[in-house]
Image (cartoon, rainbow, N blue to C red):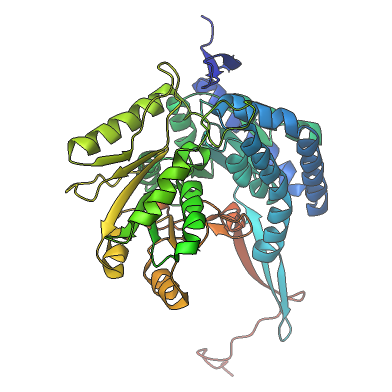
Length: 477
């Protein structure tokens, strides 16, 4: 019987982009056995040689950047201008990881009285990585680079929607000279991911994706406390706009649009809830809706380039349309509706939905170009509304002065906080992660080094010396 085939499609056209076999349980076993066999040898490679290989990988990605950007665009529907920035993030991750490794997990030595105190770090062994579709190169790469640098072997299960991107990236690693088995890929859907996550042969799992899947993994890993688990699970992110000067309203509208609609709203840090002051929001909405109406939605390679492309597939589009319909059934008002541009493709218009009068608003991540507007009477109510979520990834404030921002910063329950910046403009040279349902206190990006190696503290002396001075009977004469 032939092995099932995995096919990724271009959401803009429905055309097949990549084809390959779906991994079965035997393939998952084989990948883990291969990684397990390769890991000791890879760990034994001198750090300077691992760094040199990372540099080669970096240069190969740079040389093949156009092909990688095109693959990402074809599998996700993101505009080419945006996927080119993702490729640059993949390249930049090497430098950031090298710095973070030395700063956070490098060796430390301190001489005491007759002994030496050492702090070194060891790799966990074999780490599984479950990658998302929204940044199919950058986000898995953010786990893979620091994991390999620390001496781990990696088994990657990319999103079933973006297998071609993962395959192309593995080609870059092989071309750079990564030893066989140090990076394995198993392609497939949720069943393959579950088989990998539950396999006794892995020493940890690094996950980026939905809260539903992340919480299931947390329950599963509760039975294996000896394995590292790092979860990044998105958010229902608030953006408060307050005390904005009239001259700054166009800039505020631009920041809102960037926060809500970049990547067609398919970033975990996108603003989902826009919180404004009742009675003072009309001028802001005039600028905001005028800008929304100018947004070009189109295919990745269109000219002029669109601001945003489609969502990743028709299933995602259908879910978003159902979520908005449910809100409108409860009394929400569409300031700008969510509509499907093409009947059989997942192109959606950017939506602004006033949910102020909705008594029950589901606390969920609407992963697409939908921004919910909430009007409140004062800033205390704005802060209460911002924190009325089980998530805690990103939160932003536009407007106000330093004292107001200080109040916002100290009161916001989020791991990433912005002021007069887009909520989705996180820096790779800083930690990236949230609290509550957004993560398990294992932030990634610059802090990925922390979960890719464990510390070994040692007290060392070159001579054998030992004496007990208290609590012994005296020698008998």
